[in-house]
Amino acid sequence: MHQHQGEHIPAISVVIPCFNEQDNVKNLVERVEAVCTDVAPGSFEIVLVNDGSKDRTWPMIAAFADNSQHIVAVNLARNYGHQLALSAGLQICRGDVVMVMDADLQDPPELLGGMLDKMEEGYDVVYGQRLSRAGETMFKRASASIFYRTLQKLVDVQIPRDTGDFRLMSRRVVEELNAMPERYRFIRGMVSWVGFAQAAFPYERDARHAGESNYPLKKMISFAIDAVTSFSTIPLRFTAHLGLLAGMIGLLTLGWVFISYLTGNTVGGWASIAALVLILGSLQLLMLGIFGEYLGRMYMESKHRPLFIVQEVRSWRNGVKMENPVHRIQRQIRKTVNG
Ligand code: UDP
Ligand code: MG
Image (cartoon, rainbow, N blue to C red; front, side, top):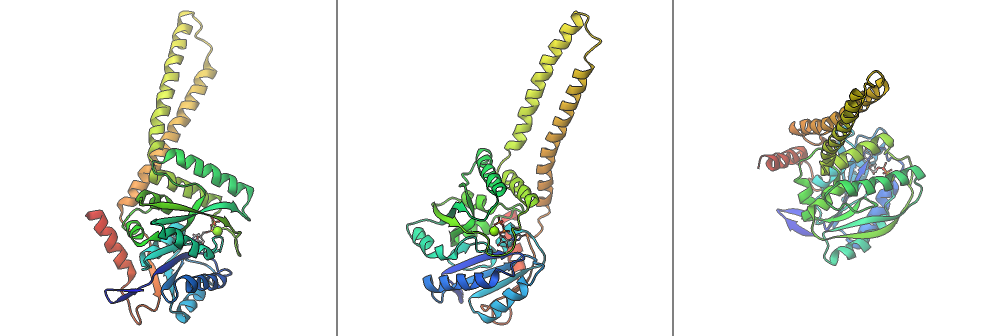
């Protein structure tokens, strides 16, 4: 632990977003606390971010924070989603090294020691890479596999396969992430984008400790769209390519129409015209949809709203009162945006 502007900086922060995890938090805190006490005795903090849970998650983690100097409990004003809850935790944590993990204990906290060793070899990021996915459905596995493969084709930065947000990051990487003002956050991609030396840490992923996955198909799809659109404009280019293709088909058809005209065979052909109109019409709508997707995101980003609102922070570092972290975060974003 070292001093920084009169503040104790923990060696390690563990940041954990929690959404309806009441059956996991007790076990979670016990395991993480045990591991941290082992590798960084007396110099760690566990930042638990409640992302608008509807169950007893908040009262539970608030009580943990009241009873343990190591625990920081953050309550967001509503459910902002996994990536924003994680962003909130990254803004609030202060450790030199930051570990990110899920609340459901799918990522074993016991790997911290090994990951730290890896980091000491000179890496800024050590990301967990899943060897197995116990307790996940065939569908989830297949969709994840297709997702990572497609993503790799579409985006410019190398986003390693089979990684989640389970990782260790140096302070400077976290600072870079915190300085990124974007609203649609695909954090594992943003980490790859930052650069520095990054290493994989293979591990076996456990099944969820309790409760159900909070990533139903609808959320998975919107997560995938966020990932692609925030790192790639290839879908926009794709519309141009498709337009070109449609144009070529149109030209060929025109040739055929001309021949039909010359041979006096002009009465039939209703079916082919109807088919062409339908195909072109739906293609155009699809293209418009892709444009709309990007346009909508530009609109949302242009509002420069804060990414999330923090309702309450319970920690020991402040004693009685601390600056509302929302202001700090907004200031930071404004600074980045306006130079
Ligand atoms: N989570 C969150 N907000 C949400 C959904 C999920 O903070 O709206 C948290 C959740 O508590 C967990 C992590 O994000 O710690 C990953 O969620 P989950 O385990 O449901 O996803 P999966 O492992 O199935 O991909
Ligand atoms: Mg999970």
